[in-house]
Length: 300
Image 1 (cartoon, rainbow, N blue to C red):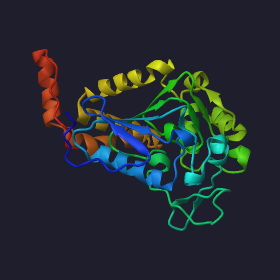
Image 2 (image 1 turned 45 degrees about the horizontal axis):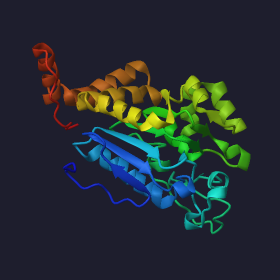
Image 3 (image 1 turned 90 degrees about the vertical axis):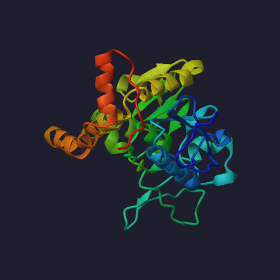
Image 4 (image 1 turned 120 degrees about the vertical axis):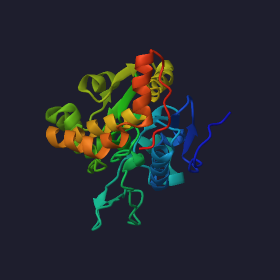
């Protein structure tokens, strides 16, 4: 039986939505012939999907992966004219300029009309600058270049197939990764390794990405989605209120907030909303009664 939602999921043309376990949303980038490159309409679609995840009470976590041999090879500004043979290189030839309102604009050498295309505040793929409320796991099944790599740098958890490849090849084409990855990358892997990725444009193997801290776990390709769903199911089995507020605390450190300020803000802005709530009471009672907790959907 399909899940019952408070509001229907947004319509999708570039992605496939499924629900492999209770409370879990799986988003599959489904343009495998274009190596799952994302165009302007695809960015808007994904931003709407992640917003729906945050607003839908019955959902607690999202998963994102790619169909075929790529997770996402970057931006696609050629649309239907794309060919597999040049997808990895030319689709990632992109410049995002800042306009006077601070929006990011895209351009590439196959789109010389110079029409600006603004990204949403959630960035590339709706993820690269997303703050959001609920966690997202990236299950990287293959090529993860350019904007695709910028997406996973801001994901909450990253699992990778042993066949996955990661890279920011923009410098090889005279452009820059400006969808949010660069300042975040240095916090994850350190200055020298971030410089290595950004300045050489070289490709990292899944093992290197794991060693550097970009990836939580490397998995055999045949078992990637089973493992990603297992992780999602484990998180979805915890108190949804606690997951949301704990994630906010981590984000405050990620965003450069001081420890004291972050702790105070977390208590004032988030913990106060869940204190004494149904899930907190249920969690304590279940522990005392030595039973599994019966969580209700978060109202945060």
